[in-house]
Length: 199
Image 1 (cartoon, rainbow, N blue to C red):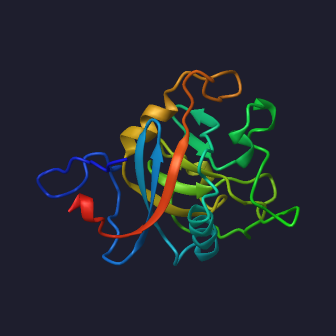
Image 2: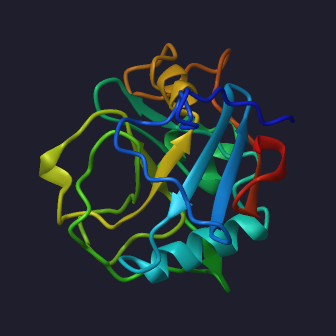
């Protein structure tokens, strides 16, 4: 699964969101290889260390492999990370999380001053602020109503074209991409920046 992202004259990725901040050398990034294209995410451990640690741990354990982006809303965001999305039962998508010894592992809220603008990675949760687990969402457009209410912990640095492709997939009444063209995470990796193949 090769990584190829075009750069502009200044070396910035053409598929980065407008306010993307490139990782520093030595920083950890996540690469999501999906059947719709690839996405690179940087992290913000200073603002949300527990969420970053949980996401990186799950990536390294292969937790996200085979999960789908089960909720896509144009003009808003794409949501994934639910292990229930691996099966064919649509009704339980969005209800799952990371389980340990039969108990869901939740991450306490780490609300911060990061604005939920295009490309931001944030933790999905229920009405309980401390209920975030494995599910995450990537913003397609800014939504100020989420600021200070959800734990933002990263940002897309390349592959917003893939995010846009996913959010525009045909979907059902529950905002779930149709079965004949789902958005699947084929593989996820934690890598060290800069990535050799992108130099």
